[in-house]
Each structure stands twice: as structure tokens, then as C-alpha cells.
Image 1 (cartoon, rainbow, N blue to C red):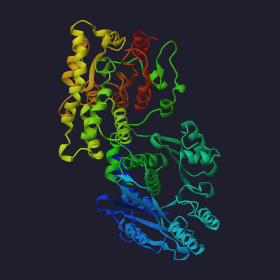
Image 2 (cartoon, helix red, strand yellow):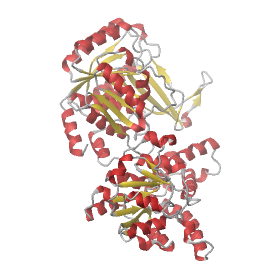
Image 3 (cartoon, helix red, strand yellow):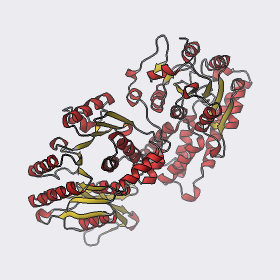
Length: 636
């Protein structure tokens, strides 16, 4: 789905009218500053000083915020609040979003309180939450008003979102019965259901559910820690669609969205992200996007794709239930990196190997594309060279010391582990990208953790210099061993890699070296190890001007300059970046799960990330280079 297509959908959404029923909540944030706290003279108890406080719509209010971000013609709110300060604040915020709140009723009886979730933030950490409205009971009179408003919405709006999240918010069976009568009467209208507790009770609705909810609707109980495999989601979603004949959308977390309609099953893959994520509210984003698309006449497959882009925007917004604007959705859609084969990646038991080889076949369709390779792009470190083996173990302490600053030796173990967990996750996610981009992430982490005063935070180039100095100390020691002939080039190359290069050259394949390491170092190290002459297409590495080099640019230039068909390009590497970029252009992607310490054999830690990045074949090394050459040139 390109920019023009998404822009067209966004224009159509501007003409639709959306109604939102649900549990309208207020999220309250109180930032506590201990410096202003004191002990109460009257009670002798400590008082907490609120430095600042702010509020945002939660529950169905967040659904409205997400709908509003897509700028439909109108939004109608249907629900109930209490006659209290929280209800007045919530109503005001919904009106500021452009919503009509005439059907946001105030229930006076039964001491109904506006659902409010008070979150105290103390020294950057959330204290135990304070909840309002836990014991609410809706009256029959309130239910009757809501049902009448739902009828009006079905008559006048293009789509109705029916959202239920709060335990006990629907307290009368008659309300469910009355809604079902309405939905049957208006069965031709779009009603999209997203209910945490009552999905099984409503009929004649479209459904948006997560993978565990769709399993439950098939009477399958899934442990909260368990992942429902894709094959089962297909089966469960299809069963529900065949039963109700209304579109079904299943959110699968980082694996994307699966949609079911009269055109079949549509699998929208998740998008790989390297930044820190906050998934709270992502379901509301998906629900809102699907509803707006459906109201605009967009089919289920395209609606799910659009919603996937929208959710990609909001999960990257931290410490807030964010929304996705038109501009943000277009931006993430321009160059997405999709997740491939998530079930296979996470389950090595599913691995299948080509007979007589150590080659794992991740994408059987690739076999039909082989036999035409004319150009090959190699990553360097971990693919051919092991001179930089262990770079992660060097980056790890550099990042830890940079983040903790003067507190590095004194910080408590719990805090140290918290920082370390984020550092290790970041290194894992960013393996294979240019070092300077990793240092951009480091700058942000230093700032986020707050141990280092702002004026002492280095820029990305300075942090890169610190890291490179530490890494090159190790690399230079290894080069010294080569120069003293204590070791030879074979001791620092992946098994069979040079012979494989020679085999490609004998078959008149043009070879290129493209690394995220600095260009000068790449060329120098390839020369020292004695295979630089094999890369007759050129050797490329990171440049200070980031706009002049990326693996994507190299691949794109090769395809364009030589007018290649996609399957005439082979890309090999042990990092996800080159796999992702290769798959975007339709090339043949071979991942190397190299054990860099031994220089041969399989490193299981590389397998999952390479498969998710799109590797079609995995090899542990090039020791079976003759088999690999035969396979690639259809002589097996």
C-alpha cells in the first residue's frame, strides 16, 4: 500500500461519521516531587507534593482520540459518566477532540463515579494506582438512554464502534438483549465489537479481538504466557467468520493483524522496530483505524494494513496512550520492515533442512528463484571476518558506563539490572545497522535514564569515538598476531567463506562488500585478511555523512545500474539489516548463523532475528560451499 493509496483512504475518511459507545474513562497523572513533601502538623503523616498534574481520555475515550486523529466528518460519543469533577474534565477533553457529547449521560443515582485511574509518578516510577468507579452499577434508565442513542447512531452514522473494557461496566442482561435486537434490525450497518468480557454475547457485529480472545471464542483456553501459533489463529478466525458471516480482525501483537472476510484470510505481517516500545493502547488504535476505513468503504485487507501502520506509530510513543496522525501513518508506510515467519523463528523444532546439508530452508518458494544470480552483496563482520568478534561485549560496558556516568560504581543492583536489560535489548535489536545509529540510540538512553547531567551528555559522534577506541584495541591486538604470524588469516575468517567467494567469481558473479563498520576499517581489514581483490564490485562502509551510505543504497544502486531482475541479486549476512533490505527488493537472502568464536557451526542466537528479517535460507558457515554453489546455480 503506497503513499498515494493511503492518502486516498485518508481523504475518504474525512467524509465519514463515526459513533463510539464504550466505557469512557479519565487517566490522571500526578507527578510527585519529594522535595516539596512535608509532615502534616495536624496528622503527623507525610504529605506528598504534586509538582504538576495532567489528564487524558482513557478507555473508549482513547478510542475517540484515535478516531479524531484521522479527522472524520463527525464523532458521536455514547456512554455515561458521574456528576463529578472527573466527568466534567473528561467531557471537556472529548469536546476538544471535536466529539459530540450529547449522548454522554450523567448518572446521578447509585453514586455513579466517572471511571478514573489516578497514576502517581514518584521519581520516574509509577506508584500503586488509585481507581475510581470500581463499584459502579448502571441503572436501567441509563441503559435505556444509551440504547436509544445507539439506535440514532445506527440510523445516522457510517460505523459504530462498540467498545467494552471495564469489568462490570455492563451490569444488566437486558442491555445486551436490547443491543442484539438493534444489531439484528440494522444488520446491514457496520458495528465493530471489541469487548474484553462479552464478545461471546453479541451478535450481528464485526469483531476485533486479540489472539487469545479469538481462541476463547473457540472454547480454547490459552495460558496468558502462551503464544497462539499462526496456524491456529487462521483456524479460529475462520471458524468465527463462517459462523457469523461478518468480518473478523485478530491482532497478533508484533506478528501483525489477521483479517477474515468473504474474500478469504488476509495476513498482515508485523513491522520490525528497533526503538523502545509501549504497546498500551495499540488495540484502540487498531480498532479506530479499522472502523474509519470500513466506514469509508475500504476492504478488510486494506483496512487491516492501514491499521497496522497506525499501530506502528502509537507503540513507539512512550508514557502516553498516543494517537496516529495522517502524516505519521504515511511516514511509517513509506519503508516498512516486515517480520517474516514469526512462528518458525521462535520454534526451532519447525526447522526443515535441505537433504544432505546444514542449510535450513525458511522459504521454500526461494528454490524456484535460484539459478540466475549475477551479483552478490556480502556483509563483512560475522559473515566473512571474525576480527571484530565480541563487539557486543565491548559495546555493552561502553553503553552502561555512558548511561550511568558517575553512578556506575555505586548504583544499586536492581537499577543496574534494569539499565542493563534495556541496553542488551537495544544491542540485540540494532545488530547490523551502522554504529552511528546505535550511538543515536545511546544518546537517547543516556538522556532518558537521567543519571548524566544534560550538559555532560556527549553527541553521537563522541560516543562512537569512545566505542571505536575500545573495539579497535581488541582488533589491533588480533592484527598484531597476524603480523607476527602467530595466527594466519584462516583463524579470523568464517569457515569456507573465501572459497565460496572464489566459486562465485569463477561463475562470473560480481561481488560487493557492504558493512556498517567505517569504510576505511572495512577496506583495511579485508586487505589484511587477503580477500579484498575478490570484491570486484567494490567495498563499502559507513561514512561520516550518513546520507551517502547505507546497505539499502548499495542494493538499490546495483539493481538500477545493472538493470537486474530481483532474483539475479544474492545478499548474504549475519545481521537483520541486509536481510530486510534484500527482501524489500526481492533478492535472494541467505542468513549466516555463524559461531564467530569457533568460526564454524551454528549460533542459535542469530537464527530467530535472521528469519524474522526475511532470510530465506540459513547456513551456519560456508564449509559446505560446494553444495551451496550447486544449489544457487541449480546444479544440485
